[in-house]
Amino acid sequence: MSELGVRLKTAREEAGFSLDELQQRTKIQKRYLQAIEEGDFSKMPGEFYARAFVKRYCEAVGLQPDLIFEEHENELPKPKAEKQDLPPRTEKDKTASRPGKRKSKMASLVPSIVVLLFLIGIIAGVWFVQQGGTGDNDAVSRDEQQNSPSVEITDDLNNENEDGEGNNAEENNNNNENNENNENGENNANNDNNENESEEQELSAEDVDGSTTTYSLSQADDFTIDLEFTADSWINVSNADDEDLHESTHSDGDEISFDFSGESEIIFNIGNTYGTEIYVNDELLEYERDDTDHQYIVIQYEESS
Image (cartoon, rainbow, N blue to C red; front, side, top):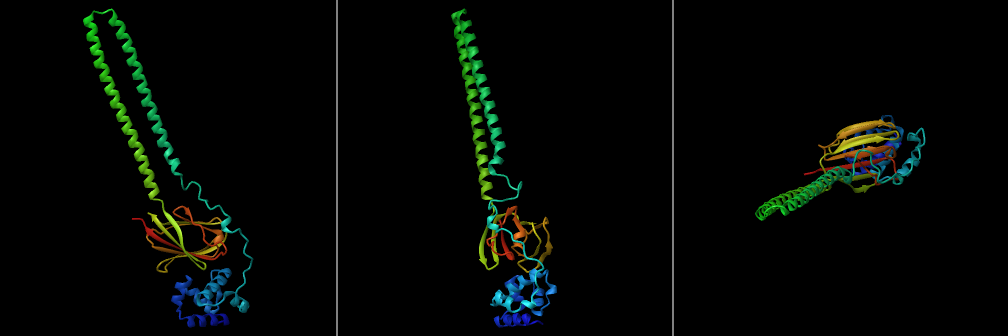
């Protein structure tokens, strides 16, 4: 056991934490905590992560990480290369989203509006044609009436009035039915819009504690995660029962997907957040902290009722 390991273990015992309790506080697996106390950093997923885990260990037991690093520099593994300077995440477009994943609500209504306008145009055309046809019949009837006996004129006028009233009543009924259909179509479109708005998921940061950020996901029927990597990054994924669901080192261009709909909480231990993008049900998660690369992201999921 190294001097650093003895010092860390002593601080843990003085704080009254068992390894299991420390695992709960740091979200670092127990086998890695034991390796740190034994001074065996070869069991770590990488040299960079060894220093990050030691820093997290120090913070949990009340030690100053900078002081520990200075006093035990010769015992800690040294990274082979400097971390690439990347711009803070706040400089990225906050409205960024994956192309093709989401369509605007207005765009989804365009086909319905076009069909509605087309139907209105047809109805208006039929109405104008009917009006024009009625006018011609009236003119012909009046010319014929001038050369007909008085009795026939009276009969023709009566018949014409009856026909006209029948046609007008039929046109009014058709117009009323068309108006009702248009109103029903508009009401259905409004109802669809209201349903889409009410089903919009909410993903918000609830708490920031050091390098751990807790998010809440509500009003969502599913809990799917897509991870996209733009740089080398180690990642560990576990659930509320501390069960390891995934652990690996990924490279630029890698993409992985998960369906966590049956889980109430998922913890991401990310070694390089600058090179890792998290999409929750196709919505880009914005990191609350942009001044550190190693972070713990906790997402608590409440299934939509």
